[in-house]
Image (cartoon, rainbow, N blue to C red; front, side, top):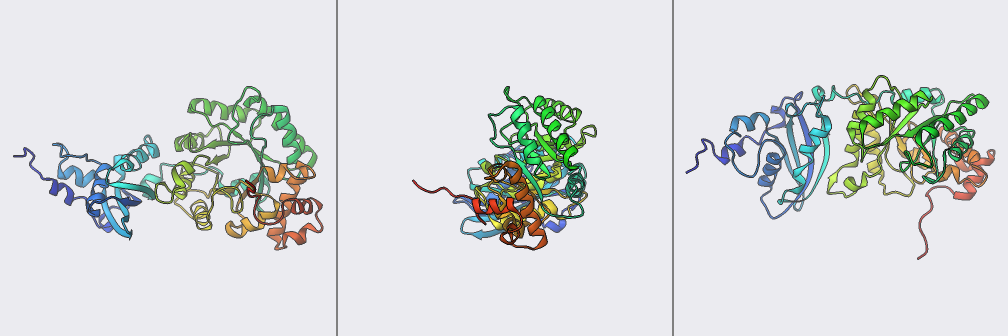
Amino acid sequence: MSEFKFSEEQLRNVLWKDIGALDPDKYIIATYLAEIGPYPPKRVAEEMAIENSTGTWTLVRYETPEVRDKYGAKIVELINAKENVYVVQLGINGENYDPETGGLANLLADIAGNAYDLMYVNKLKLIDLHLPKSWASAFPGPKFGIEGIRELTGTKDFRRPIIGAIMKPNIGIDANVMAKMAYEIASGGVDFLKDDEALVNPKYCPLEERVVKIMEALDKVKEETGKKVLYAFNITMDRQDKMVEAAEMVKAHGGNHLMVCWAYMGYGGIRRLAEDPSINLPIHVHRCGHGAVSRMPDHGIDSVLISKLGRISGADEMHLGAIEGKFHYSIAEAVRHVSVFRDPLYHFKPTLPTLSAGNHPGNVATSCEVVGNEVLLLAGGGIIGHPISPTAGGRAMVQAAEAYIKGIPVQEYAKTHKELDAAIKYWGVGVSKRITGT
């Protein structure tokens, strides 16, 4: 005879709730897509709720019905989407996690943790998280947001797409060459430059030396043209204390923008920079590595949720791929990214959507037709590989953005703009180069 005064059935009964019965200012709503094995769907949903909160595989004496009812996950929706595939929606008591200390790291370790390993689930994808206001209020969101970046780049009045360049080659060149390249590109009128995600602090191109020399080059451009150009220095590092030191160094040498890579540094690193009042520089967030957890349509974490949490954590700009480029892409997904970046969301300022990977002057209009003009368009090869020069490449991208905002077809605008004309003749209009041959 069991020594427990409660049964497994009693514990399972408290798992099911109508969403309207949950306190909207307390519960986090997690939405999953689950492909299940040869098991009853209701029991699988129950196992997910148990694993994602108070329970384990067997009864334990201190998990009473009262404990599970108050702190356990609640199943609020179970919908059969297609054969063996279900939408499972769980209400998660936000009091189980402290947003100030554990934050997203603690939350995701639980609700996007062991459930992926359950034997009852073949594939599992976390689609969305709704955070209650009580939880969301702990997070900073973007410090500058779209309007702040517009102010810094001088594009508040004539709101064309913001144009930026990615330094190429990614790695392998020293700080002197980087500074020369930055000067050439910035002289073409672009608004923004950035390190590649691969470049942080190699011995042949130390971060501090790079900051000093590139900012000297951009100061020279400002003296000559009157235009301030932002440069996002990559400070992605294992240790947050070293990352903060690097951010302070960038600022001390006149640097005006930071960059970090989300996947291998985490939301906590973004938040650490965004919440620091002494740093006060915009944060550019690269999402390299997201495909490892998001690209499969039925397993992992949805890429749009990754973007949403990036905004909440403090990303002033964040990547969403390219419309016509070299990376995997879907229009529906791009539109969803733009929505979580720009639509109203509690107190958070909008994050500037960033397109990169195969952009060039001939596909600016194609991109903007999908995402609009409140966007940062980045080009590496599409600027630096221009047949005339990197300066001409910068001009051509800016000219293409002007053509779009004026409603003039890019081929027509190219007739009176030689840099754009050369780019169109070289790369064409529309898609980027595709692999051919054997």
